[in-house]
Image (cartoon, rainbow, N blue to C red; front, side, top):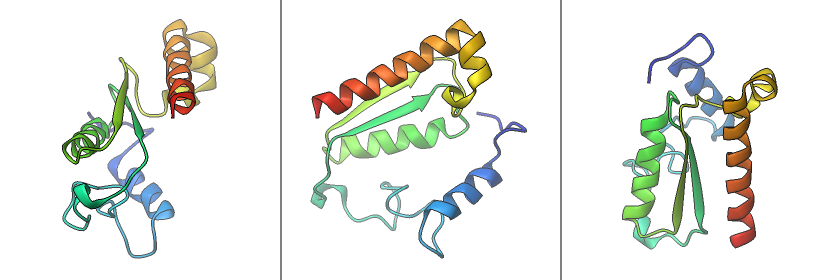
Length: 120
């Protein structure tokens, strides 16, 4: 997906830099289980995962790689895709309040997360 004034690859790298241990980048095993730094997936005991992806997200392909790596590693993983939505669409209060599609997609996302929590 293309970058936008609201989200660029440089911004994403900076956000990850705030969340990861000092000295790490996006290849940290927690954010890149399919990368060279990650331990073999098969040996890890992990809880069930719900991977939520916005169809038009700048990092959609990376999120799908993450999901596929979890599946390949025989982890219990579910996928939810918000059709036609961009990164963090649910945080746009104006959009949620005024656009019926964004509102419906936000409701569906929240419902899916709730159902996943109740199930597990």
